[in-house]
Image (cartoon, rainbow, N blue to C red; front, side, top):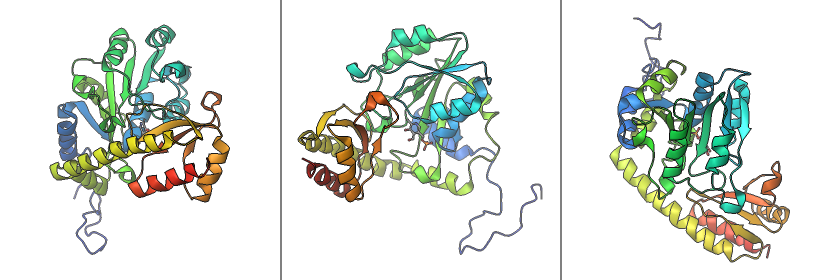
Length: 324
Ligand SMILES: Cc1ncc(COP(=O)(O)O)c(C=O)c1O
């Protein structure tokens, strides 16, 4: 009788307990996440998608009109959106497009200033696909110790052949790793992700996160997704996605309209067509939508294509071939 809840749940045909508030913080989900990410429970904060983790970082570390974030475009657009909402300045150090979109460590470190409170690195990168070597990430983390929090966004790491930096958060107190259940664990609709960091940083971010952030159905779905049986199933779909990614690469490489396909460690391919408008028109006719980058002159004629089911991948290949 402490929370002014309704005494009886709405009748949905099952005892869903939705008349009760969820836990303030979901302890058993946090435990499952900690096991999955190879860290202790003190190093994990469950959030509404990793997008919420990005927002929390800006709110915790950037004073509006004063502090700045360093981004390495092209990158996930939410970094820029949340920076702007918070009134944080943005320093762009573009990836090296002539070097497979690798990070330029020297340029990045020399662009950092006293107000650079956050550095965002996406590995594997969305939208272009390569991962950043761990030793390069750690070089940046070490160089910015005591000055910036370095955020390594590992949304797509399950599709890659690199190891997560998550287990290293207890050794580097300016390292934050973002993970999500939206990609390899197939739970985008549930909105669930994790911030992984030193216990001190987690306590700080926990103070910024809304109480009762995750709803009971989301907590239940996420716990299930992290059960050993479901993780085994997920492993099967990850392997299929990786195999399909490489099949798509080979098939698209043979199409005349495809000029270049970059190496990808994620569940998508990034490529350049000779005539993107023509491809868009054949894909629209086939009811297929891909991601293009009209606003970015350096990515002219480029597109990101998500690896889908084998049947949908076949439909895409046929449509692209028809433009030859
Ligand atoms: C690199 C990257 N980080 C984070 C996210 C956000 O994922 P979510 O908020 O669904 O966990 C995405 C989504 O596309 C992404 O591409």
